Length: 222
Image 1 (cartoon, one colour):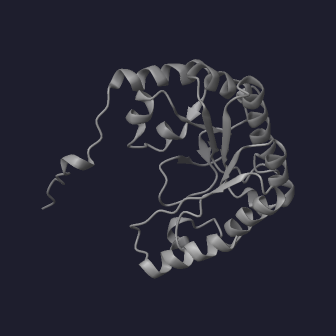
Image 2: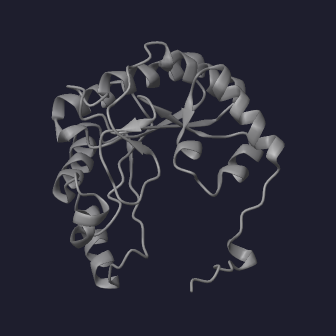
């Protein structure tokens, strides 16, 4: 017979529900999504308390089926042409000094959503010129012309997560490619050395320390 899992106090996240509801009201008013809500982030309360959020553009349905992610999967939604300006308005309302934009993966779009990313970056730059902008992008099929559109918009940071070690890609990122993600990071840095590069790796999925070290070496190389 299964028994209930008792979680230690230190792993439990507590927050003021009013902070979260205030953020939800703002996003609902502007018909915006956040990765905080869509991915069921356990740190959402902390971020809302500090009046910050990571915007999720290009809809809230991902065309890929990564094993670790709670975002809905399926057919991509119709793009909202006003979304770039809405994100800029929300960033201004929240008085964000650093604005982070991410997206679902849109393999159904020829440019992978690059033009929409670029429009969002430009809108934020126009509305909040003192703020820095971080674009957390999918691989956009690794196509240079797609990446060029994002870079040309002038983000201060381009972030693309490698997520895990190569041996776990089949389970964790079955429709992604480790080498392609490395090439994305390399190309952005070569194309625009002034833009800060960023990535993220999850641990605890079954990888070994040596595999993590090899990923770090690969990332340093690009």
